[in-house]
Amino acid sequence: MEHYFITSESVTEGHPDKICDQVSDAILDAILEKDPFGRVACETLATRGMIFVAGEISTNCYVEFADIVRALLYDVGYSDADMGIDAHTCAVISAIQEQSSDIALGVNIGGAGDQGMMYGYATDETPELMPLPIMLAHKLVRRLSEIRKTNVVNYLHPDGKSQVTIEYRKNSPVRVDTIILSAQHHPNVTNEKMHADLKKLVIDDVVPKKLVDDKTKMWINPTGRFVIGGPQGDTGVTGRKIMVDTYGGVGHHGGGCFSGKDPTKVDRSASYMSRYVAKNIVAAGICKKVEVSVSYAIGVAEPTSITVDTFGTSKISDSKIVSIIRKLFDFTPQGMIDKLNLRRPIFRRTACYGHFGREEEGFDWELCDMADALKREAGI
Image (cartoon, rainbow, N blue to C red; front, side, top):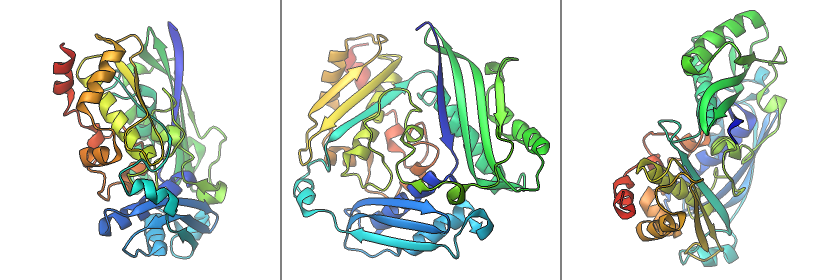
């Protein structure tokens, strides 16, 4: 289409679903720190006054789930029962069992931990090589959490959301059409003060002025009140924010979440590897945007398929790119773990503000260290 709109959302670390993602990944990190080869598939549910942890974990170490949960809740900011959950007093219930011996048969020999399809995406429309709507949505809620945690304003609570709609013309972003920012707050703050503060301290600080015009719509707490939030307002579950975690609804998604899963689970490792490959392809100048997709059979190391779609923007054929990928990259579970150094306790930080577009320590799948090799193979 010549003219279209794309909308993406993000949420803060205090959102109930993101609490669950963080708990699952914090437990994963605690195990990997002691046992890098531990097998973890950890699911979390959060509701008023209670965190429930379940899943399959096989490890030679011991971690105290309740301590991990309480430390995380306190760090996020849930330290008062009036917020619906208190790190000091909430109930923490665990129901953990070992990984199925039938699944372990395939994983032990280097096979994929499950079947499925995974996708990686990259585009040159932002410096991070990510779609603009999701990057702005992430930056808005990160800034919202920053002004809360540093006490720039003293009336914000941990829960919050953003949503950004970008107008595109001829496949390029041209303006911000709509911004929605919802922030949990103390009941005594006035709407007028909060609107003024969040417009100045969050929206104006994050969104480039060149993308905003007199037709841009801005909604701050559209219902007029957001006092009840976190697990008191909504039950949270691990893996319910998969579009927030990836590309904001741009491109495909295989459906599997990342949080709470050790890297033998290709839902996580192959999605990271596909992003790594896609980002390097765009960084090499081979195309303007690309989606890399892979699929696996449980217990089998090599992917059952690798495909590429460059949306008509490539300097070489998509089939040639696939051949180059197969030559340069190892998509077996062990190959991906080794290449991206995935047996480290790095995953709790990934659970908020997106797994991609984060050029930070530990996010090795965001490196562009294969761009030159790809360029040579492509002959451009």
